[in-house]
Amino acid sequence: MEGVIYVRRALITNTITNNKTPNKHMNKGEYYEKLLLENQKRAANTLSYKLIYLFFLSLKDKTTELKKRVLHLLKDIKVFIKDENQTLDPQSYLDFWYYTKLLGFGDLFKPPNKFLTELVHSIREGCGDKDPVEAVFHYIYIRILLECDYEEYSSLSLYIEGLELITHQDAVYYGYYLTHIVLYDLKFGLKNHKPLLPETTQDAIQKLVALCETHSDIINDENVDLLTEIMLCFTLCGVRPETLYSQILNILEEPQDISDNHLVTVLASYYMLKCNYE
Figure (cartoon, rainbow, N blue to C red):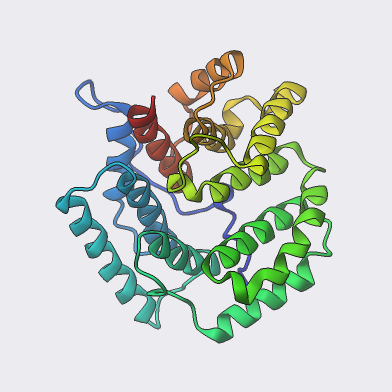
């Protein structure tokens, strides 16, 4: 199924041209939020990233103003989906369904049955591949489908153990696999980590720390997207491994290239959550 590879979230070509450093009156969270929300590129993943960020905002912000912003974005998404001239990548379609469901809109953006049937077929066929990148994205698809319609897609959970083994071949993509265990376990923050983290989440956090200690070479600016996801996970879980936390934070403070829209999204989300959770 053409394009059913998450559009390579960390390798996405949807870029932001205005990536100047923030002015002295703007904190990092505000700066990245501005970059993200003022991006007028008409693309499915642009809308998806904005939805993800507004979802994170909604965890703490219950104002009428934010609700209006969400509803306005949902209108834009609806128009985009109906426009036959636009390319709607599979991952964005799944994100529209997943995050609006978490926001309380039910199956407002549930994809057509034909799309879902083809997606499930691609997952079953692709899970035999030995590519760590493919394995990460298949894991993401499975977690979204399980969340959105567990009764229909519960059989896909049988593939998860094999996917972890495949991702283990590459330290960076194994890191992405682990961050998404945490994020989907906690429903991206909707599920409170107190009083106790789910066992699978605790295990993933421990493995993330061990991964960074064993493969210390991944702690560099080249992997700032992954490192920001790791910090998101630490923040949502209320954990702070001292040495590792400081090492990663130093890289996040001055990322060398922020033209990637996914990176801007996770940076905006991290700094906003950091402000609210710590």
